[in-house]
Image (tube, rainbow, N blue to C red):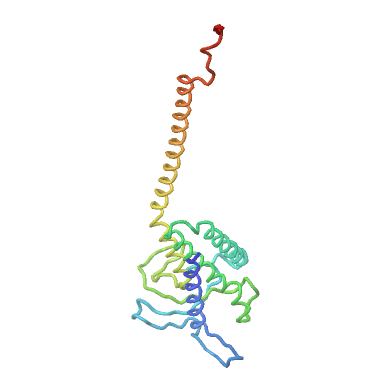
Length: 228
């Protein structure tokens, strides 16, 4: 389960960057950070890559399915996170590439779940599970239409979104490898079973032949008279 350290590292990085962008205050430590204004843009590499602060009430990459689904999305994310954690434990002895992929996906799911669960309460604008997800990575992109909307830039995202994308990409890249490995294990198991059956049959035949050559009950003296 060492891959959980990877998940934890991504979650911490995701939350630190979001708090820096959004701003935070720790009064008892006299720490205050204003953060960015909503919609503010900071160029990093011209207009190709910039930091743009927005929040979305929906899913990854700014997709908003509607406020009526907000609670269900949050609950689904919570259940999915628990399911991924349990599955990671189940495959703890499995291929490293599979475990790394799941660790990235788990980190992304938990990172955005923290926003949905707690940011509304921490920033005093919504109840639990109704918080907005902080997005800030803004990258230029070619014109494309998706779900009825046109984009001339890639949808603004965060490190949690990127983590999920990386995890899914690893799964897709190594899926064939995992499938072939499982088939090899299955074939080896069948061959081993066949060999055991063949050895058992051979041993039985050998026992039968030994009994025919060397019968257990010696009948050679039966019926003979013993001279006096």
